[in-house]
Image 1 (cartoon, rainbow, N blue to C red):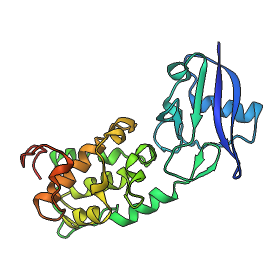
Image 2: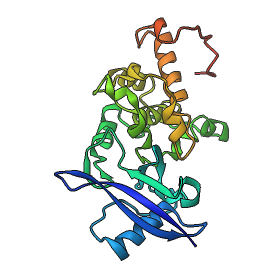
Image 3: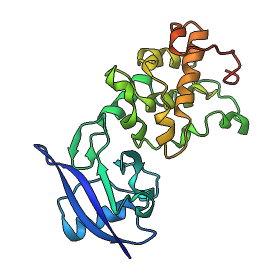
Image 4: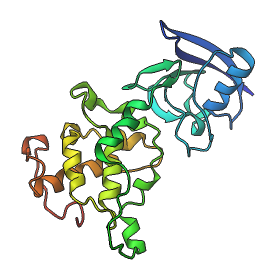
Length: 247
């Protein structure tokens, strides 16, 4: 067993502070297991979210040594630096207490892009190749990591956020969804063009969803169809219509 010092940024509703806890760990100990140990054995007032502990529910998102990760799938041995680990709540969301942030803002924004399936009639038969078009996007667990890391909110507070456009892409690519190109219109109204294409959302996604690529495809298609206003200065290079696959 080795020892590690966890530095945790805390907030009690009035003030922020950093508390330090030294614990023992082995090669399989995760950040969430460390936090559970601290809460049950050292400080019962420590607040954080955890449910499935298997990277399925997405509730334990946090900033670990400056990187956005799920605590349940992050092992202490992989992130400890000089015997220390810094834990902070995700940004772009209101901190409720300690590592717990308010998910309401980004979940509520999903309504803006109608992030649910709208069935069309008659229903078409679905083949494996149809599902492949959006199979990665269906893996989204609404963890909020991409929302927290996104720098676009610094310039545009009305920006919908990466999660919105993952959901837009998923249903837009479903041939049995009735909204079709209306989803591109909704994405435009949700300020999709405020994306700075830094790819941070794709990098932090625990399900390896190509978030920025989805946003680029939606934007490009919308500009080709005249739904979204062209802005060639944004990219500085040209695209061919088939560069992103068949629409």
